[in-house]
Amino acid sequence: MYQLTDEYFDGPPFQFISFANWEATPYEKRPPVWDDLAFILVVNKDSLTQWRKWMEEFQQNLEKNVNVQSFDAMQNEQTKNTATFTEGSIVLIHFGINPYNVTTGMQDEGQHSLIPQYALKVPGAFYAGLLINKNPPDINAYELTYKGYFFNSPAAVATILFGNFQPKNAFNNWRPVFEKPFTSSAATLNSEKAIKCDVLQNLAIHIEGREDKVKNIIQTLDWNTIHSMIGK
Image (cartoon, rainbow, N blue to C red; front, side, top):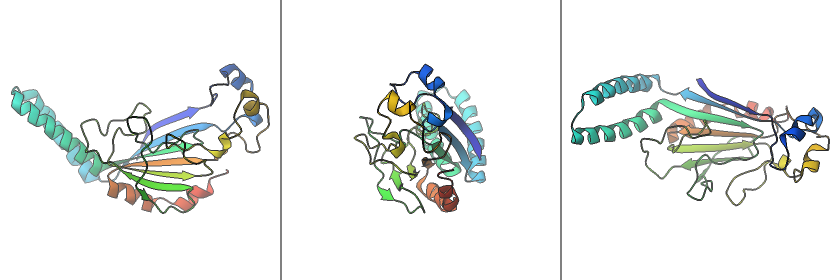
């Protein structure tokens, strides 16, 4: 397992709050703190070794190549093998801690979250679904998005939510229940919060990669322990 990113956001979660007001707000009146953790899990070391070997050989062949037709063939090989080895070797897992907006990890052209096609059984989860990508992988499918903790276009994405969330909005995104009273700067910052800002109120988990690998990770994780962390 390799940690990919750790993004901690302790700042105003909504546009109507200035950063100066946010900094001046006492701890007991702040909304929950948002944090993102992402990891790469190596699910097949043999495949990873073969991937590295192929990349070395591919780079050597690329340096020797001068023919346009063979160059096109090598690009096709690169696209195919990059997807094959990525899907056979690794899985990305992202934990969104107290997020204010949760997507399924893939969107359509109108920036609507794609709706997972299959429900998943995860003990204690508010929601769990599996999204199968209908688009074949291209050379950029397994590059990271600008956020740094999602693949561009993986073969499958599992979305698992713990805690209390509002129904999906018009863009098929989820928002936490704790966001409901945050309708103005006064409502957000002038009242003491029953649950402190560093308590885990909501947890969004995305697992991305090949469908069978994603399902294996879901079966491996101790969901009862993860569920027990909510409210702590």
